[in-house]
Length: 136
Image 1 (tube, rainbow, N blue to C red):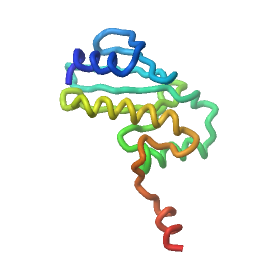
Image 2: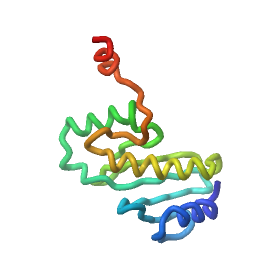
Image 3: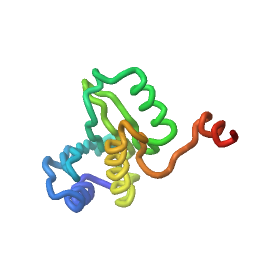
Image 4: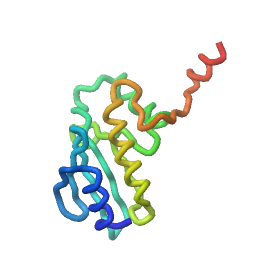
């Protein structure tokens, strides 16, 4: 994967893409995405803002951290500045087109399920409490 291929993928997924190679903004179904790459260091990230993190309760922050382990899969709930983000980070060159499309879908899902299932897909790794409840 490289910046030129990413640009083509983002343009195929969204009608609204702005930016230049290595720094894009695009919108899918009212979700605002940002993709940043560094070809020299072989890194990329696709992120989407969720909310102002300064007004989050301790319980909600804990729920995001639990989701990072059990249900957010390749996407993580992350804080930078005053914003809670859904973030996918990966080495750039090793990505396939399918993985980029899947990453966008997972970021989208993490934003949409924030406050409910906190998940990036239908796959979920059960918690200790989940296993205990199944046994009862």
